Image 1 (cartoon, rainbow, N blue to C red):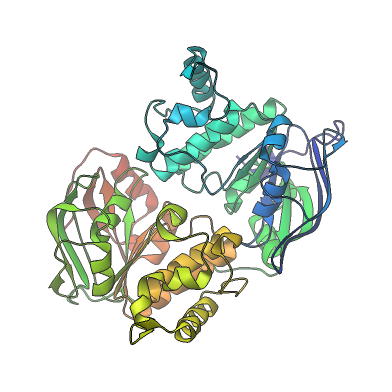
Image 2: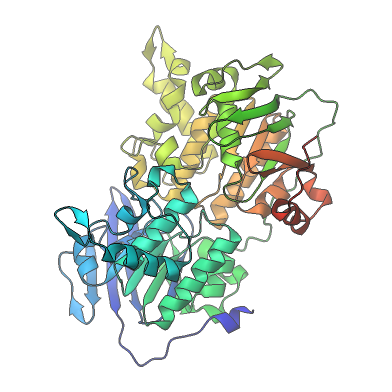
Length: 514
């Protein structure tokens, strides 16, 4: 289906459900949203696109009451809004699905979905709640088990819980901030079908995304932001991927992936060699090798065990079987601190839950696991620490380059860059990158791609995991296919297609990895 067929411009009849006039928001010395004006119409999908730090997520949070505006006016259903917060926004029918998941891990799926809106008597949920959950699940078609605790779900399923929670609030305006960042292509299409259903019901969806193909396929109108300012708003049918990129960056971006370096000779001794790995968390039988200067991918469907293999290598999950050899030496009883000391670093997929301290500065987050490097007679030299982190921040193109600022005030993409910097500061010999571009815009993605190829050029071994199969196919020299906690095959991406790989992943053969 073409972009023109899937996009439409709402008729000029109904008045806007939300009107913003000159909205502004400051974070310290950063003008995150600078005088933005726009209308949200009933029954439309309105996409917000821009680089990380462009202000699109902040704008969505201003509309949903998560942030308080520092200037400008907000009109909802024709009435001017004064004080604004999520509770007031909820009463006006506005809900938000944030990129930073806000779930209660110890509660069940159903409890999280109805949190704050429970139909209960004496603390006991009424029977109607189960029927309401079934109704919402039938609309979303996610198939989540209502009684399972959220802590036992993967990131993708947790994101689905957030989506279902907004449906439970019967919101007429839903702000979705990167709702597909952890979903497979099939799950994304189901979400888009749900969005079309919401649109047909007359609801408004604000769709914040870095996936420009998805934006063109689902949005009615698109607003492009750059450096906190609104560049333009118009029908999605008049935009192309190239025009969106040029509007976002102020320049064209002709190259999607940097050129892959020459393959590493097979006779080269591996920097990492893992055999027969198994864990209680779902790894059954995984074996792989990575040579110095080689980018090796793990390709599998969500839930296949890719991240679990990474955690096993790093020592975050304990091995019940198998061996790991790093730079020719056995990594006995791998644990994160042992792995870091041996030259193995990891960027986890969940940057907030597993990687960053949001109340701490950029400097503290990046230097956290390398304190000894900056110690003189047992005392940390802040001067040396600031110099090293500052140099790395410039290399990563961190914006704004204020390393003493709290990391929670930075965009998701810049937080991701800081997380990568945290792993690279120790000059590792082997790096695991689990979803390194999750929630990152097209410009920042290319910077991370260049960083990956630069690491390989320096002789670092890289294990790359991504739900965007095109990333693994375009950046990796070799890749292992993963299914049900096993490595089932090894491929050379340059010599095969993703269609063939998906056929194998969806198949029933159990071919062992070489």
